[in-house]
Length: 405
Ligand code: PMP
Image (tube, rainbow, N blue to C red; front, side):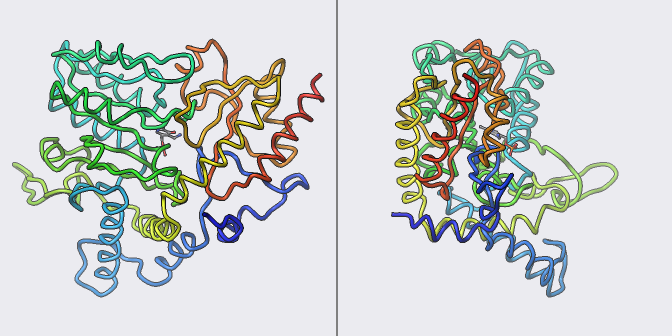
């Protein structure tokens, strides 16, 4: 089992008071806190090896390049990709999705074609496809979901047709917490030869992800939602597909040869990494992955599952609480409404009590529209949260309900 007190000691930010109350951080889906080893790795980089990569013959440049490529290797192992060059560094899940939408759209999408996404996507997995479809004269088709927050798989099956060029779906919903059956989503698309992009931003922090087992063509996530630094994202793509896509951005690093008449592009992964990357934070991410590996993602998943069950039991025991999304397959996130209290008001009072929760539409406005609500209160769990914090949270929630009565 996870030794949560030992883990908490690794996260300096957690040990503080806000408004004279101990901080209880329950906004992990927005961003997670960083362990000291990660903060130190970023600092150490600037103190000892700061140098540009892939271009310097000097010692520091070589050290920085080696460490940078080691990060890539660790990411490959972490998500079980076949090749190191299938790992592209971006600045976040949003940029990873934009990369695929832009490059895939230019290469493969024509007038009348269709892109399929689900109704529970984060805006990051809606708007890039919407813009690309508008440019290419293509149409966006939407997989609906049941009131409990599960995808309607029959409707999905019917959406797939000869015009479908790509399916893009979230692994875990940031608004509802649903873990989608992405393996089935992928297999059904593959039955028609359609590639699939999975938005794994809310999955990778909570479970072991194996991209070869999933067999998706693309998988996207952000380091900052999994205890790593901000400004680092990953795009995993199958070699075959990354080779088929044109570059996303252009400039230094990504070329093989440049003349005024014509430029040729580098091999993977450099073709998609124009300009100087965020080396310091990518090395911080290396420290994150080493940290998570020492705990073990399966142990983290088991611990969080217990925590999730406990939180759900406590919330269900409050008659005024209505869960929004209630799939038995869930990770990380619980969204709910409190009878008679606007989510924003509840969030504001909870904040004064030391609880960092999120209120609003969680960058998933279509989800809120489907339920006909302006937003929810959302708590999202991380590996350092405890049962005691959740007990304190639900006690506080009861006090808030009393206050507004
Ligand atoms: N997808 C999902 C499911 C998310 O929850 C988020 C962040 N809330 C994103 C994509 C975008 O991540 P980022 O802002 O780190 O690019």
